[in-house]
Amino acid sequence: MGIRADATVTSKGQITIPKEIRETLGVDAGTTMEFTLDEDGNLTVRPKTPPMDRLRKVQAQLSKHDVDLESMRTESKQAWSSHREETESA
Image (cartoon, rainbow, N blue to C red; front, top):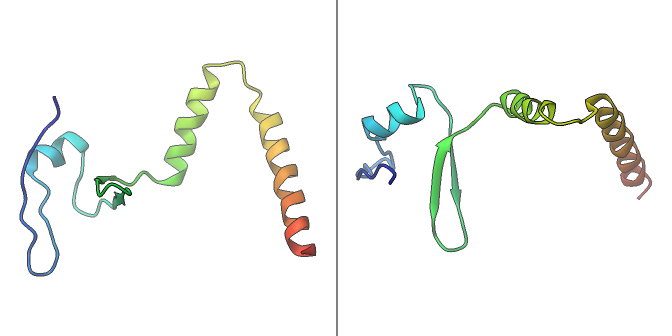
C-alpha cells in the first residue's frame, strides 16, 4: 500500500508536503510540482519532469526495441512541415 498523510491548507493556499512523501519522491526545495484535477474531482500531485528528461526516458525505452530513431525523426519533421504548411494556408 502507498503512503498516506494529511496536511492543512494555510490562509495563503499553501500545503507542506509531509516529509516521508517528499523523501520518497525526491522532492527538494525548488522542485516544480504538477497538479492534475480529473473530472471526478481526484487530484494528482507529482514532481514535474523536465521535457528533456522525459525524452531521454522515451529514448531509453525505444532503444530496448528494434526502433530506428533516425527514421522516426525524419518522419516527425516531415509531418510537422506538412502540418505547418496546412495551417499557414488555412
